[in-house]
Amino acid sequence: MKSQEETLEEWCRSLLQAYELDGVEIDINEVLSLAGVAAHSVVRPAAPLTTFIAGFAAGRAAGSGQATEAASMDAAMGLARTLANDYTNPGTGAG
Image 1 (cartoon, rainbow, N blue to C red):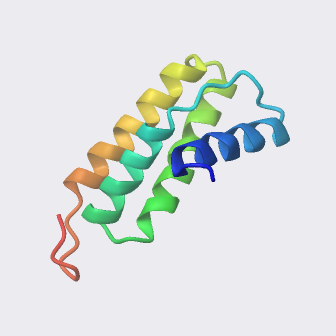
Image 2 (cartoon, rainbow, N blue to C red; image 1 turned 90 degrees about the horizontal axis):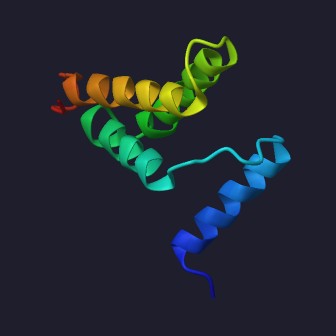
């Protein structure tokens, strides 16, 4: 039986291949860490939303030539992490 890490790595490769993104490097642990920050600082459903929007923003920045793929992803994830860490949601007591 595969470990969770092996399954995630396989799933990541499958997604990248399906989207014809072979050769793109994804730091799975960094994505999961960002999701964790968003889930705990905002609300749980913010985790997938945050990672999706950060990835989308990184893709737009890289696609427009503003920065390399790696720099775009680092910047987008860093901004999302900062925003999530600074978020205050009075309804949940988080932040």
